[in-house]
Length: 104
Image 1 (cartoon, one colour):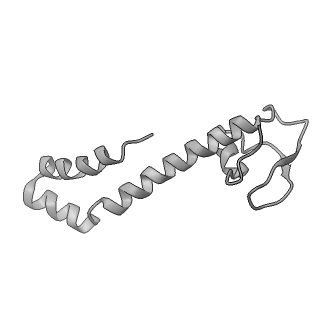
Image 2 (cartoon, rainbow, N blue to C red):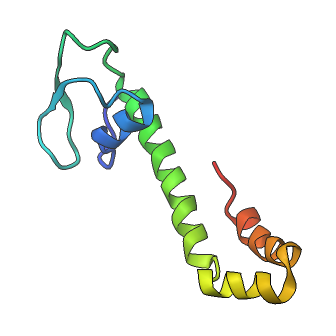
């Protein structure tokens, strides 16, 4: 299999915990591919499938964070809610967004 056209290899390696390895890409922007994996690296070079899967997981994690951030009330409104209605009411308000966009 090949690297997907939108897979950012740098972010995929970060997701895999292999970003400390030395490697060289054929270009900085996607689509790109690894053209050199340093033989002194402690980790083996990931396969295209591993990179694609890791990038998809990274995107899902970032997407849920962005979705939650867009729907949460402002910090000022959250503090006002806590002050006026208590922690339990605030938790109920926040839970709606957390349930709508669960962690992957």
